[in-house]
Length: 211
Image (cartoon, rainbow, N blue to C red; front, side, top):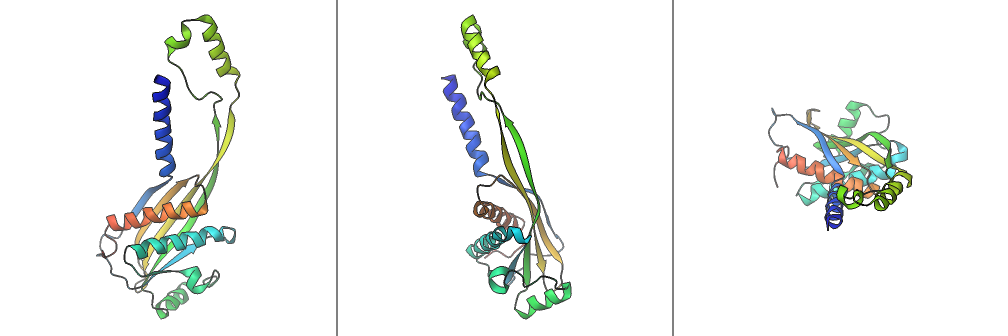
């Protein structure tokens, strides 16, 4: 019975961790500025070329979340292409967005990506002392298995992203959020979890006018 309870508890903890692989590390809102009712928001990913698929997912997922909440948002890759803003000056970029009717931009950048190696013990559970200490043979075989059963290494990847909301008219930063995603199963799940956290935090902090 104790084994069963231990297994159920461990499974529950594992499930919670698996379903919540993205966390908000920190976020900032300019408290001097009231909630904005932007008419057209551009979502712009800032990623290396090798992370192009992640950029596309990050933009698409965040756009979809914003649209679900009633905001008019579009993807930079979809509207301008993957290389439209390369080697463009700050003033020229702002001018291009204003000309296209945008009054806000949310940037999403991959700040860091780290691989971590973790060692897992060969034996994953420990029985209560009385269960195997009361008989020499049982104690010996239990501890022998634990000592001699080899463990193994697993590699996980952590992603650190930052998203900023800028008012194009003033160029000012209104909001910034940093997130960490632990070993996502795919770029799609990473982008989906991250976009949910961003939009939830945006709403809780009252950055955008509620729709």
